[in-house]
Image (cartoon, rainbow, N blue to C red; front, side):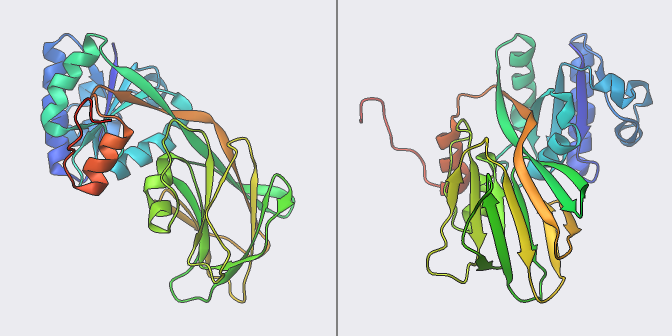
Length: 290
C-alpha cells in the first residue's frame, strides 16, 4: 500500500506528527510519499515523488484541521483517492480522527478494517459573456456576497431555468450536505445528513419577509446573476478561495462528477459527531430508551 502524506506546512505539530508517521509506516514495511514542498519541511527528500505518481497512492493522510482537508479535497479532487483526516485544528468536524488515535487507526487501515464514505462536490463556473472564466470545485459551499462596506445585492436566481423571486440580501450560499454544518448553518440553513444528496440554497441576511432556505435536487443546475449599485461583489469557495465577480457575470453551480472519498475507522455516526462538535452535551441515550 502506497500512502501519501500531506501535513499543514505552517503547523509545527503537524510536521512533527508527519515525521512520526513516516517512521511508523517504514517500520511496518510501507514507504510513504509526499510532494517536494513537504519533503523539504520534514527533511525527507527521499520520499518526494511527482504529483502524477502520488495520485496512484491507495490513501492520502492529511494532518491539519478542517481547512487543510478542504484545501486538499479541492486541489486533488480528480485523483479520487480515499483521504484520512487527522485533526490538529480546533473544531475538526470533517477530520476523522484525533492525533492520539493516529497509529491505532493506521493499524485498522492496514488490516482492512475501515470504510470509505463518498461526499458530493459542487462544480462552480463563472460565465462572462459567451465563455467561462472559472471552473472550480467546492466541498462545503459557494458564496456569492457583497464586500465589507458595500450595500446589499439583488440576486436573480434560477433553478433548472425556473426563476425565483429577486432576492435582496447580502448574498446567497449554495451548499452541499457536508457544508450544511458550516456557513449555511450560521445563516439559518438546515442541517442535512451527508448521505443525502441535495443542494442547499441559503440567503445571507435577506431583506425580505418570505425568503427561506431551500433544498433542491442534486441534479439541478443553479444560475445566479447579481444586480447592484456597486461592483464590490465576491465569489468565495469553501471560505478559502475568493474572486471578484463583475455585474453581468453568471455563477453556475451544479453537482460535480468528482466526489470526495473519506476514510472512516471510528464507530461515530454523523449525529454523534454533530452532538460532540456542535452540541457539547454528553449523550444520555442507552439502548432500549426508544
